[in-house]
Image (tube, rainbow, N blue to C red; front, side):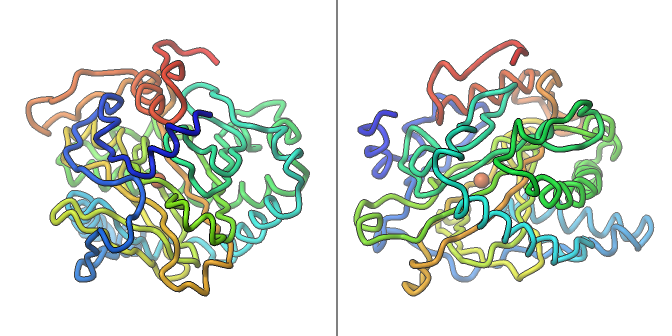
Length: 362
Ligand SMILES: [Fe+2]
């Protein structure tokens, strides 16, 4: 880990790393918050999209949801999903398990699972300040892809190969399976909004790959705060879209590209925050932007002593799928590319130039 590069990241702008991007991004922002030096947008409201009409409103309901969601994601690029049908107790159980995972295992036990690339995704444990090489993120993370769960297709599944102890996988699997049920409704609604066949991605997204990430942001010490580092650097997700059950400690900030101000996003308990990523921007020919966000220290100083927990689920296509601009979205701005090449070219920004690969192999 190059500490100088990380330290420079505190002052850096995203455009310093533009060579890695695989979609057009003209927004220019600092990777971390510089208090007193940045503008906040307290007027813009992230749209809430109730999924109830999609599930129970027939064709008219699906059309209504599609329009509402499409407008939100084409505009600000974030939406708050309600009416999704997922039991809030699942989130509470996952919260407790994340806390247990990071507070009741030793660092050595966690380091035994230190992250390595497998396919496109860097999977496993990331110690604090080691999420990326370009910024000292004040977070510990752990990424589990589909193969880390006892799910259809994973014959001979071995829990001990991925998890520090028994008992974690079933709890997180329950949430992953519940959120998997939302993948096709979201994709179908976005395709419908774009005027495409709503079922174009049904096969590709059935039993597809995903990255389920546990984030444990430890309490922030005075020296952490003085260092200028943020909890997680400003970034765009690489995926089609991300589900994030609303965290209970604030800190998530969303960049409004229309006025280049940051929005502090605090979604209601039980809701799911949805945002679009690079795969989606690529195939939608820039109609759905890959949206910038970061995690800063909480506004209320009393919360600095509290750990923050979140568990986003990034939805991918498998590595050998081709990302191709969708029909009817205008003159293609991008040539077709394999998901593997696209994904690893972008994420070599975070992990080093040798992370980028062209061919599928583990
Ligand atoms: Fe993200």
